[in-house]
Each structure stands twice: as C-alpha cells, then as structure tokens.
Image 1 (cartoon, chains in turn cyan, orange):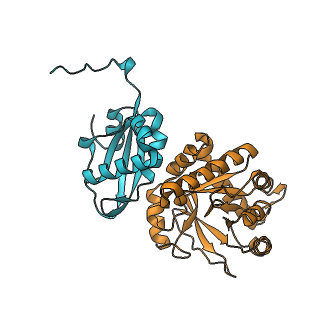
Image 2: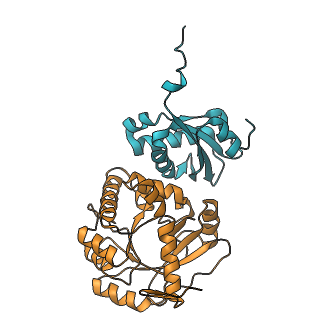
Length: 119
Length: 230
C-alpha cells in the first residue's frame, strides 16, 4: 500500500527534543515512564492542548541504565511540557520526578550532548 | 544561579533531613535553598554546609495583623529571611504593608480567590515584599482545586506585573521528591502568564538579591539608602 511522502523541510513543523532523566527510588521501565508522561499530560493540558504538542517519546533512545530518554515535541510547547513533566511525582509504583537535562533542535545534538553517544 | 527559598526539612514539617534534601538540591542544580523553620518564640539554627548556600527562612504564622507586626519586629535583627504564612486576607494585607517582611507565602492558600488585591500588590511593591508562587500547591492539588489555585496565581502574577511587585517562585517542598530545578519552577510561572525572562528571574536574580541584601543588613553593611562597599 502506498504511503504518504515525507514533507519537504520547509513544510515540516519545527520541533524540539527534550532530554530528560528520571530521578527515582528504584529503576523505572520504559512502559511505566511512557504511561506516567501521557497520563500527566492529558490531565494537565487536556486532550486539545496535548494534541497540539505533537509529542513522541522515542523508544530506542530510552536508556534504562542511565534512566534517560528523549521526547520529541512541537517547539511551541516546550515550556508547557516542562511544567507537565515536573508535575509527575509517581512512576509505576515508585516515587519519582523527571528532571529535564536539556532541549535541542536536532536528535543528533541530543545524542551527542546529553546521551554520550556518537552521532 | 538558582535559588529555592521555601524548602521544609525535618527542622520544620519536612519528611527528610537537611542532608537528604541538599543531596537532591545539588542534583537539581540549585545553588541555594531556603530552609524554613517556624517561629515559636525562638529561632532554630540552620547549619552551614559546603557546596550549597543554605538560607535561614523564618516563617511566621500569625493569628492577627498585630501579632505579625510584633513578631516581625522581634526577629528582624536575627532572621535572614522573614516569610509570612498567608491565606487569610487580613494577614496577607498586613504582610504586604510591613517593611519588616521579606516574603508573603502562598496568599491563595485555602481560598477560591487569589488572596491579594491591587491594594496589597501596591503596598508589597512599596515595602519590597515578594509574593510567592508555590509549586507544591499545584503539585498536590487536582482537578477543580488545582484550577482554582492556578487561577489565583495567574491573577497575582498579573497584579504584581502591573505594579512592579517582586515575585519569588519556590517549590514549597516538604519532601525531597517535591524539589524541582529552578528552570522548571520558572516554566510554571511563565505558564501562569509571566514573560519567560522575568519568570527565570523569579527563581534566580530576585531571590539571590533578597538574600544578599538581607545578609548585608544583618552584618550592618547596609542601611536605608546607604551601603558599605569593600
């Protein structure tokens, strides 16, 4: 089945990559983190604003050892996401908070600056 | 440089010891924390620690405006920061009208309005009293209650911005898990209607200036209109 073509760069909406670290009593799994983030976003921002954030939690960049991950979102909603993420106090069944390490414009710089990876 | 001027430890109503809170504060890149102790006839000593600036914040919980003025006058020469436990309109107004008070904490506590009006905001500006935006209020509330708190804070920010009153954003943490980094706290104030640059100042420049000014005053290096320069 035919797929839609990737939009040219001039038509793509600008995005930001938020690199976060989970600070918790015990280590948390990717699924627990994703559930906590989505639940808090929907409660705090509501369905309408959450849809505008164009949020995407990048699965293969979540490091369960370092407890670090990357969220892709619209450049207009970085501050709203900061607040929504800081309102998280429980992940799974453990006390936890999410600390934002940095915000980048490309996935490459997110990896090199904050995840210790090679581009 | 980020400061959080409202943190509870086991010295007041907090769950964790000062060491535990400090370890977390360092993790959240805070340069200074205000350790709150309640005034009950004496001022609890807060130990000095290396690596992070510990500010002694004495919280007054007055029953009447007269009680507030008397207590503030008694402890002004000993406390680094004098904070007033807000929520009652009379107390909020008395705190704003007192030059002895540094910070009015959570004026909207337990109310459905914002707790301060244009008279309070103007008086707070004239007397250099900072109005607090307390993150724990939002964190612990949910649904309709959270909505009322955020509406009250939004109104306070609007009033303070209009009159040029100082605002300080704090975590109000009673546990190390309530602590947040200065930039996250600034994002809350920004979301509630303040311009981003000014919001960042509420967790950095404004509290830092308040601490420096009061320390100089305690060391007799600063008086009204006069300051000793080394």
